[in-house]
Image (cartoon, rainbow, N blue to C red; front, side, top):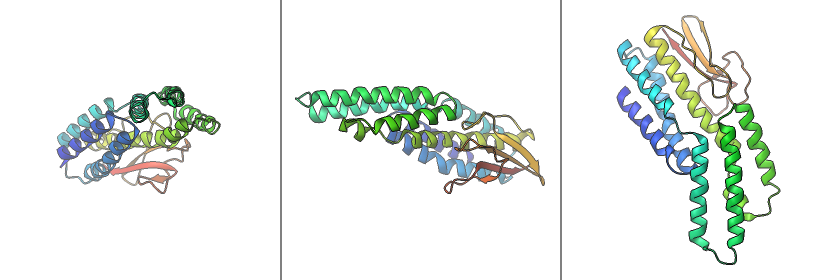
Amino acid sequence: AADLLLDVCQFGRDFGAEGGLIQRMIGMALLLPAWNELKDLAGSGELSADDLREVGRGLEVLDGAFPRFAEVLSDEAMSMGLTLKQEKGWDPWGVVYASGIETMLDVYSRAGAASDRSWADERAVTERLEKEMQDYLNPITKMAIPSLASIGKAVREGRVRLRLVRAAVHYKATGEAREFDDPFGTKLGSDEKGGKRRFWSVGPDGVDDGGNGAWQTPPAPKDIVIEVER
């Protein structure tokens, strides 16, 4: 079961790594049930320490190969540009399409660069870009560029769940609370209470609520939390 779930994770990663934004979001959607199942399996007590270490190694490889949002945005810009060219060609409307594609490349380039920084920086940049787009007169630009802030949040949520499962699997295998980076903050939080270990991300609001939250979204919890027994 664990091997099959790792295969599903790899498939979701590969599906979302090539192509534009829609393909990326489908890939993230494929990953979510795998995270849920791995979370439950890791906490079930049915896997030996060696099994858990093997799962941890698979998740580490996946984490290291996770697609960068900047690359996805670049693919989206090229795909949209080719689509528009094929549909309209370079007729008298060509200058409108060329201008729209040029703006799209600029917006995606700035959003992609921000996605490699902190969540606070990325959110500030994408929200500013969305405000700029409200003033754009080119209808191609308005039609082609989606909500970058919401997509950026969804991408980080996917990686948060991967890191939380990695933390839980490592703890079950070794008894150690390993430190992981939090895509929404600095480091994942961790504490132990009542014989259970919790790991959490501060979530999209960037506020550490001390592990007060839940795994499921929506509704959006304060923190995104995983809990396991040793």
